[in-house]
Image (cartoon, rainbow, N blue to C red; front, side):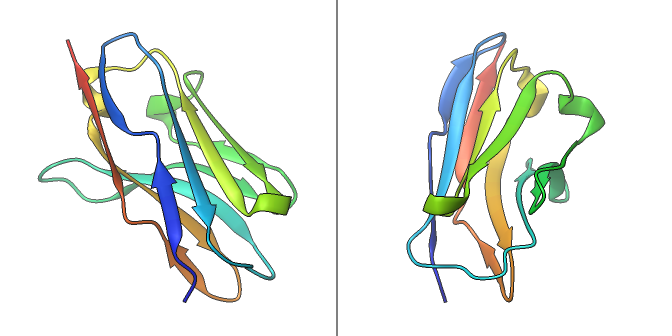
Length: 114
């Protein structure tokens, strides 16, 4: 098992920005995609953004135009730049790297206050 280490969560006022990163502590082979999910209290975990091995990206409609996913293959690291944050973005954010195996981060709290 390769742990994924997330960082960058925190608290911010509405309209602010935060940047999340997720780094694998070891090598991951045959990566299919990297993604960010989030789970708000009382809600199911949902896909926020995904970047494929070919570089294609997909975003939840609720974050399109505000969030940007990127990656550094050499570092097995995926990033999420979050701009124009809204209170409804408040959640625990999880990274996922899907390859020969499926890896999840431990989660990082993002709190947006109005």
